[in-house]
Image (cartoon, rainbow, N blue to C red):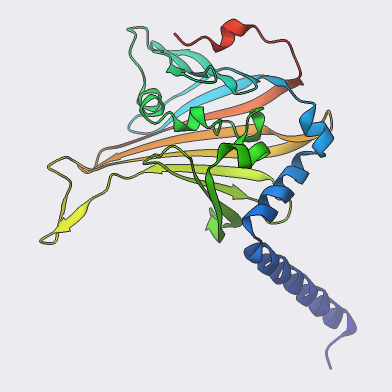
Length: 286
């Protein structure tokens, strides 16, 4: 006969499994509007969200070369957001590389040339050519005062649930985001199925190809693949809003030749200040 303690443990384990399966099923069946609504609830009440007009974030930044090189450099991170405007700044000084700066003034975008010889990094060049992520205020997620899910109807983007996806061993709710203005970028937002917090965005660019005679062809051009991942974690509540305090951006480039490069920016926010007066010069496009 099975001991009572063992029977109790088995029952508890079964209950946990059933609870997980139920939550998984519920999350998988949610409609787009429900996911967005519950995500916004995870951020704060409608009143708390509406009162925020600007945001300034300061923290530490660590830059790492993961593939096609090595090395780590520590620096600072600053982010300013007001309405549709944003200024995203990673600042370091590592062998002539000064970091990254991405600006949107609400209309035009700018990416700084942050090497001492005035050229841009691979990441900077990619963001400049694919500046939808700045125009749509996607970069930085809910840190942005114009995060598109705060007013999805006004953006007129096509947003739809793609069900549950397993990313790095975790089951997440996937929302595909297609801006009103056409882009070749594939943009998918991911949410925790328990909290509905936005924890990941993946941007991918894979040029269209055709298969001719069993060989890959693309008008004589080499195939290149690009990927940006934004990870958000360490959520804390202040001013009635629950926001991430840890941010991780990873950029990967892969060429048909086999060459690839990957870098990472890891940020820990030291302060998140809402409704601060922000110098208009912070959003000036150079």
